[in-house]
Amino acid sequence: MRKECEVVGCTTPAVSKGLCVKHGGSTRNPCEVEGCWHLAHKGVYCAKHGGRYYCSMEGCEKHPKKGGLCVEHGGQSYRKPCEVEGCWHLAYKGVYCAKHGGRRYCSVEGCEKYPVKGGLCTKHFAQAEAEENEG
Image (cartoon, rainbow, N blue to C red; front, side):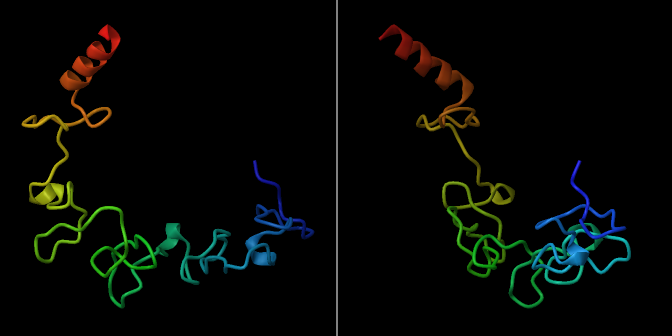
């Protein structure tokens, strides 16, 4: 259980410096919903009451990846976006997202099973492990 705010009569959980959000325990503002002590996103509401982090491009409600931007608007990610026009999902192996046929496969040439460990499917992982134990 969190420690309560040090202000006399306040039972709201302390966030930092022994104070709750309402009494200056954070540099971010509290949620504007009456009785809510959660921190607001973008200065108005907490996530529970509709405040969320979104891409910083006006009108875009996609989640940012890096630098405040979603993948579609230039937010950097270690994976590239899907190559289908208008799609902002991340691609597997640099071409298409799962929705448009992209998928991760076992790293053994020609195998189209899903990898489970070390980039290999169950069958090929077991074979590699057996070879390693023999040698």
